Length: 291
Ligand code: ADP
Ligand code: MG
Image 1 (cartoon, rainbow, N blue to C red):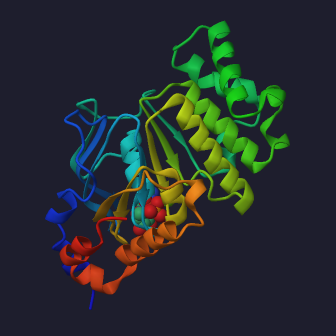
Image 2 (image 1 turned 120 degrees about the vertical axis):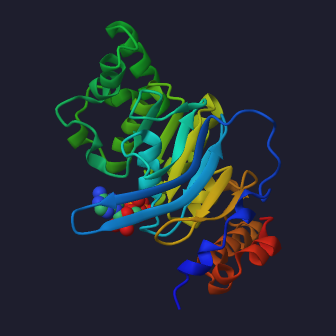
């Protein structure tokens, strides 16, 4: 039997306070009842159904779910690249109607840097294009962030001379130099080898400690979600619906080997994939809400 109709019944519990109560401040980014569809002449693909979440300033908010559950689509909608078929996304209370310099994205692909520009030119480009800064200011800002991601010695290098990890660092520097309201990251480390991935997670954490930016991060890795996020939204398989929202601020790279981390990862796995959980989400979540 399909799980879909049962998942239809999910609604209320995900809005219940699975996460700790939040202070009464306005969310920075708010997604309300987001359904996303891709329409072609032949058919319509529903990527997500009625997904809601609130991201607060300084959050490291993770969208976690299996491949095809609509994570990238949600990120693109937050970026203003695609419009929801239902629902609303807003930033600081203002509806998102298209892309803007307040939301900058880092993607998985290593080819997101124009290859004819040096590292420095790549980082400067959006600063100049958005007319945020004058050339000398843009150069200074760019060099600051290139230094922060450990590439000061590579400012004049071209992307093809860099490793995958270094290219991702450039993309991160380019994004943070824009000082966006929200940094959007779509599986930015998924194509890296395991050791580099670990290092990049560590460095992202370090950058966040320094700059306290707001992050909306997509991954299909439970471990990465626990390491990177302070809050995690679990999405069901295609089409993506909210399964649960969890606090994960207590976890980080320091805790990956701990029994608590392992048991949190196991619980998330069950919430995502357990047939029983899908059949009876309310009671399952009631049992498992604390990580
Ligand atoms: P995820 O990032 O979680 O893997 P996606 O957001 O990429 O999921 O995709 C969600 C669903 O939408 C999938 O079924 C995918 O095939 C479909 N989809 C994504 N992009 C397009 C597109 N441009 N045209 C048609 N279908 C798409
Ligand atoms: Mg994706």
